[in-house]
Length: 229
Image (cartoon, rainbow, N blue to C red; front, side):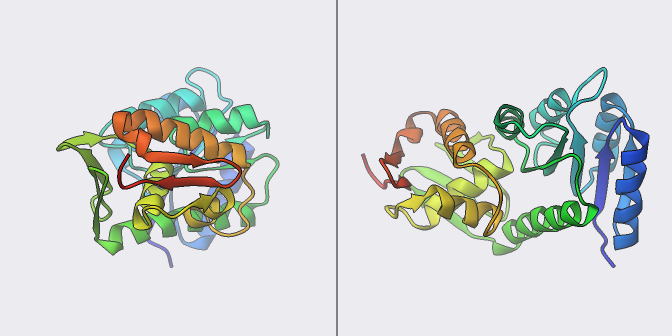
């Protein structure tokens, strides 16, 4: 049986109860919130291992909830899976830019949602267990602490941005295609657009400031992290 805790923030009662039932049957401990305000309170008080977040809610919508969670030091590293009734790239990209790790479009299969949850939790666990510290191009990345620093100043990254940077730093100078980055960060055969990788790289470069210049676009291929300019 699993010991992880999951917070579901969903305003449609039938969907909320359906997700909760399936997760509890799988062995997860579940917290439920029917609106964004309650979801934020529970996230801060219970510190769940993962959050399932509906985007389209009255009041504080899922985008604002995600933004607030990622801005708070206490909750910013909690992985978030978005639930969206629309599969347009704009919605998905907006959520990923805010720091969400994954998304599932409605209607969805509970089995697929649980598989996505397990994959995100597994990646989070792997990061905690490796315990390595990487230093490339003046960027310091501590895998066990999920911490990135430049000149001793902490850089706040989403989990996906962190995993992309870690992938590039593990093999500096090596060119990764967009599909290879998706496979390394999300797992093989993951259904995400290559455009999403470009958006994540763009956000990562901005957060790294001058060090973002070390992430080079290799035209027609993908990206690599250079050790020097």
